[in-house]
Length: 365
Ligand code: ADP
Ligand code: GN1
Ligand code: MG
Image (cartoon, rainbow, N blue to C red; front, top):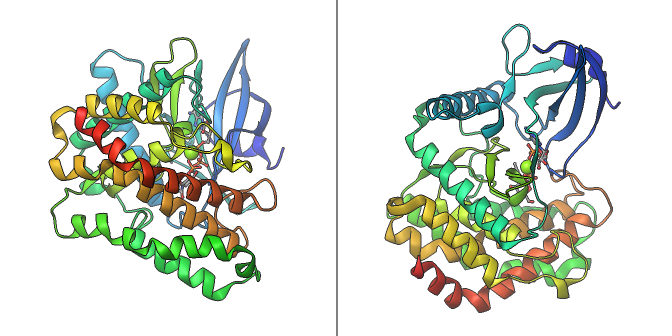
């Protein structure tokens, strides 16, 4: 075990003997573990996470956001007769009622969620139907957030999808070139520079009020939603760290970025990386179907562009991290962030060619 999980878990309001606590999942940000805890004859599973506090510098405020959203969600699910421990991310509080435990020994902030059983967070789309269902899940989640009083939410990472700001940060990484890697990725840097004009489009629409600012999830990739392992139907939206003001074009775009590509995010063989219009249509149908009339014209006109923007932005973030010596995104091997950046740029090129078709599909729904 990486940390003293016996001690850490004992601080939370759950009883029993910790049988194991092993590294779990494919998230790029937090350190996630699956714990098995035995109480009497029963073994229960939990997700234990060491929160990335380099990035989430105000953990109490972050956790207060999660508490507000999950508690709201819980009430909604209970009122329709559902099971909140399965249909929502559910926190296990500490014995003294806190949302997290700070372990001074490891300088780690830990939180625990109930494990959502019999459900899968896919890394790539295996069936178009699954992708459609993930769109329904994120669409319903957007509806839920629209009813939620967001005035008490803290903006966890300001400018999270402010692509103009991301571009400036990228230029700074190129300028500093800490690892001397810039000369080996000139082509990729040029790719970003050539598309600078993309950066301001959505932020200026939001700034001028032409596009509504909504409370959004901001990290809507396929492995942040759990689907029932048997029926493939949506179970719960997870990874609630980045709920903040944003645009639905970001949420829609990020789902497309990750899920419409049949290859993995760090695929080395770029011939396998492309945008599937079939998957795009499945997502558009599910998402717009769930959102119904709440989508404005300006949003609709920018959903397909949002996919290009989110993919471009994510590629730029991966490349900046490669230049900065991989300090942001967790990586399992050397060069992984560069490979991730390259898949994103390949997808951007594909989307640029397919944009009129993507827009046509949006207009259908
Ligand atoms: P990160 O912020 O690092 O992406 P996530 O919160 O998304 O971390 O968790 C990483 C992975 O752990 C998810 O993709 C999912 O596979 C799994 N996971 C997270 N929470 C739960 C849960 N409550 N039940 C089951 N699996 C979960
Ligand atoms: C991170 O946490 P995770 O792995 O679900 C990142 C997203 C990126 C994504 C790229 C808080 O998401 O913004 O789009 O990696 N999350 C954060 O796969 O930066
Ligand atoms: Mg995640």
